[in-house]
Length: 265
Image 1 (cartoon, rainbow, N blue to C red):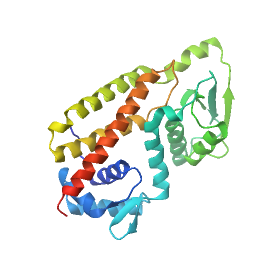
Image 2: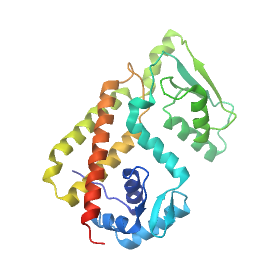
Image 3: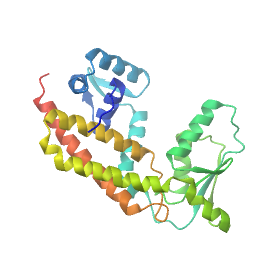
Image 4: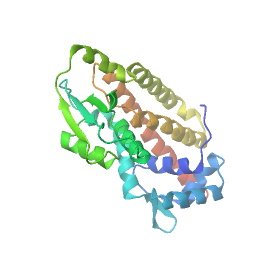
């Protein structure tokens, strides 16, 4: 498996994501870091910076977990691994968010707004109008509240649209890279399944290391998935991908538990 160089900050976040909300001790982080040739000093500096940034907190001496705010962020990412559970049957309706009156002068506010809209799969139909199919499991009010909690300004307007003119209706699917999404579902499902078949041939160190690297790649895919309905993407392929990620998670948890048990502290 080809591996990009891991830095200390990413390693700590990935280890905590892999533990699915549980805490980790600094000794285990340092042991894991050796697999990636990251020195102890770099880990301690990263821990301090993550703490100062409000990402992690010490619950006792040398034991860290995500802060409440980071827990919510992590939960969103990890819940997206259950992609099928976050969608509902689509009734051909669309959600629309109107940002034309919000302005673009405040670059920080603009960045937060665009990040929130991207996170929930909205695409810009035309300037100041962002849309997505209304197939997320959240209610209208809950989604609007979550958008605002994620950075959308409180004075934003949102509506539910049931009809489009024929021309616009044909243009809408092209807003998302649907072909690329389908290709990625297949690519990463196959990558995970092939790895699961061959993992027993690897040493424990290599298996644990590769599970983390592969997990990082798939989390990136899940984070950016707009969870579109059938007709836009192949939902069955997405569900197969989500299932493969869950299998990877389970294997990764088992490998890292075994790795820590056998490590010399």
